[in-house]
Image (cartoon, rainbow, N blue to C red; front, side):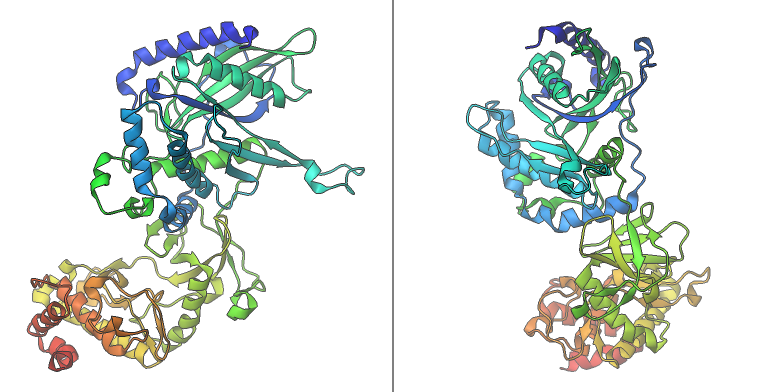
Amino acid sequence: MLHAAAPAIEQFAQYTHNQRSASRSQVTLPAEDVEELKLWLHDVERNPNVKKATKSPIDMLKAPERAGTVAVRYWRFRTGAATNISLDEIVELVVARRNDPALKPPKEILFHRGLLAIFQAAALGQTDVRFEVEDFAQENKAREDVRTFATLRRPPSPVQRSCNPNENKRTWHCSNVIDQTGISQNKEALSKVWKCIRVHMPDEMEEQSSIVGTISSRFELLFFAEFEVRRRHDGSFELSAVYLAPCPPRSQLSAGGDCLWLVPDLDARLLALEYVKKDERTLAAVLPPEPLEGFTAAVSYADHIAETHNIAVATLQLHPGTFSNFEDGGFSTSSQADPIDLDDSRAFHGPNSVVLRPLGANYVVKIADLDKIMREVELHRAIDTCNCRYLRKALLDLSGKVEGAGPGLAGIVLEGFLHRKINANDCAVDGGKLGIMYFGHVEAALAVLHGLPVHHRDVKPSNILLSQDDDPRNRIAILNDFGESCWGDEFVKGGYCRRRYTSPNADAGGFSTPEDDYISLGLTFAHLHNLRVSDPYSPAGKMELIGKLCGLHENYRKCLGRFLAE
């Protein structure tokens, strides 16, 4: 323990105790639950004019306005790393925490690895900011934890230009300590923080400076603190004061109290004990489509690390370019169009892609893995030449690579943004006549597709859009989303529309047929007309639904009656 820091630590403990007592009922997660502390060491503020008596709240993180970036990084996490994180292991650890404070290290390691994946996904695409696991977790020593790395790139001097470029990088890392008494009394934690600060303290610091740090408790809470450092006469440094930020950024969880900020929202929403009784066995199975607030916070934290180290914050951008063959890598960068900023886009979340609408744009950008987008572009080259107003068209000259959320992403630009998904109320207007009209539009779209020949393979209500018009009779139905489509003679493994709308014959092999699309169309409109059968997922139940739909109007019977005769 450093004796020079003891008075400041006592002052720090008394301050936090008083603040917590005044706002205990307003804090979402009590500070008494904090057992493990970790410091992320940020940049040094060189401002000798800061007066101790005029401390102001430290707004460490900017407001999470980058909805597009958050949406794409979260989608990649939900469809990637989260599928390999066992929910059982996390829940088991939570139960063990409540029943046995003396946790075994293996469970802690599993917990840290799961949360590590969240922070890695939050920083995906952010150059030189990365999160890694410490590799020195040994018996009777600190348990495995997560380090934060921010690499500074500085231009080399003329003498250094011939040297190894890695020598011009500077790495910052965190300290990990364990204490059972909580943050207000954790003298060992603050002492170790002070030691870490001294190791990385630059020689050119002013006589009195402040270092802003973030102390995290297992990524569940963030405490924002400021460490005031003073230079002694002999040139060494001492810790003169430690302050907690008096209020949390943005969310204002506890006005005037400890700076508690929820990060990944796992405890309250995903780690509830009732999940033990359910069938889901991975974190991905219980994650909602929309980004959790905690994941948004993690993205903002990665941004903040970059900003404090003068690293450019990665922006989500679409780089238009002409598409080439798969063998050529998918793209050619010959396009002269400027990149399209997607940071502040409005996001629509799907299972296999994210759709963004940039601010002020009259189109949307569908983002997915490169190979999926390339396949959809290939199909649109044929579809868009048909000039069918019931098929949604793409703007291929604006489509291209997506940067800012990790490698291997691309975006296809689809025209129109005012469309909305069809629903049962639309089909019920005018005694169901509009439903019949919309059915005819989609039937015409399928006829054009099958003439190419292309099979849609994903006909369902969410892929039928309605154009905007004050008079419902002037609206048209537009068939959307060709992400699962294929050529007529193509063998395709896996992937088809939702089970409710899948043709009974669709799983009989790797080939699809036009009839499969028409049966899906019939099941879709049976659902939109609120038709019911006892077992809608069985082959017999699906044919019964189509039979009921054909009984509503002659147009349905003309299109779908032949399948009942079979």
